[in-house]
Length: 219
Image (cartoon, rainbow, N blue to C red; front, side):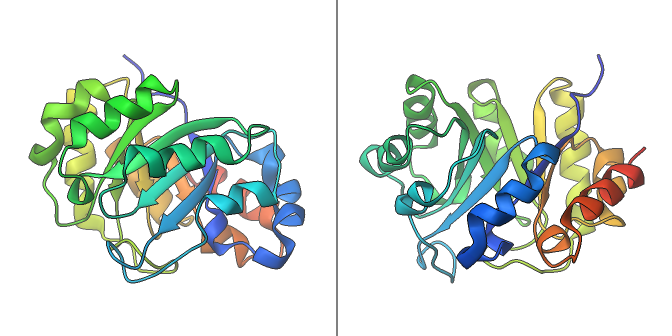
């Protein structure tokens, strides 16, 4: 079975927040998803705008919501689902390390007709989420410690991606953290197919050229 198609996912965390709509307009034709990172200054040492940020832009590109949040309740998750009905939410990702009842949280997301996804931090072994692999549409392998953009790619995480690809040949496997034109080929070779691009895109003078550079690197 072939690995699922490569998907490019710019992370809006690194975009110019004062020109957010303008930056989205520039890249949306070259993006499969747009990621909204959400942090609570509890699970990770950083804080971001919450669901209200979804009201500040519109796009035809489906949204990937990555909750780096301790114990996200159903009510909390629903605030993102309801914030901007013009947007299509593709998936909501929660962290294994942040959920005391992971299966229940994933099921709530699925019941809202959104793809449930689970993320694991660099030090978390894949074994910890094997019991929920049949409940998710995507697994996110963090290749930096969650919380801040611009960190160095942790290549030792590739073993988890290789094992996961063997277990789930058709699953979307997202790699998040430190992805650039040098690390993207490493991640794709290991089996990742969903690439989160943050500072590599938004710190570039030509964002579209940066995306094309990534695509050229994995051919």
